[in-house]
Image (cartoon, rainbow, N blue to C red; front, top):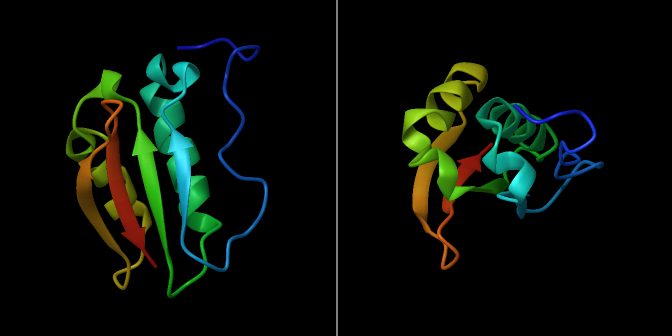
Length: 99
């Protein structure tokens, strides 16, 4: 796990009323998959119903279906959806959450 001094800031400090992308692939996230999940959940909470957020995660943790998707599905209501989109050119992964 990272130390508090090196933890990345959450990907947003505001609510989003349009679709957007949350960058969860900076070096601080590479060291802490729990922080990726926590910040992904916060990004989803800050995304308006009827829109989506693309969660871009670091390649260090592998495919997000193994660690991120179960956490998202457990926390979301039944109207939300979680889908794997693709890999980034930089090696990360993109998961789209529709609210």
